[in-house]
Length: 110
Image (cartoon, rainbow, N blue to C red; front, side, top):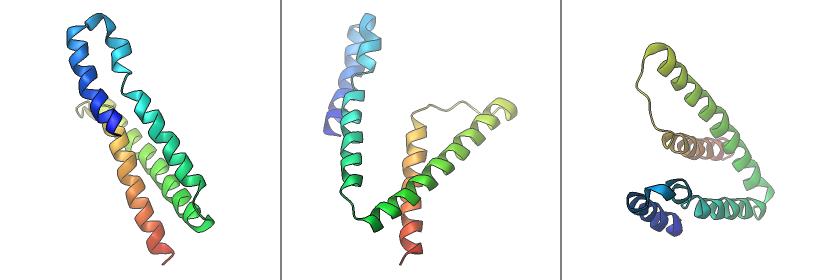
């Protein structure tokens, strides 16, 4: 994640200086995110079965809840005139629900 923290502001600054390269530069911070994804998958593979089951339930909760939350807001945006929000909030919703789902799963199996 350190790479992301370094590359994101760097990309923003470089885009200001080199606007013709904005598409490629905007994708620069994605590379460290791909490495983070690989680390999460490696972490899940190394878990014991119980913790893997907890994470599966938490991920299922986060996915279902995240889809429901984003679809609900999308409908409210389109049909009720709520303001548009940035896609950058979608991971915040999913990661928050993952934390909540992990807590619920751990409480359930205590």
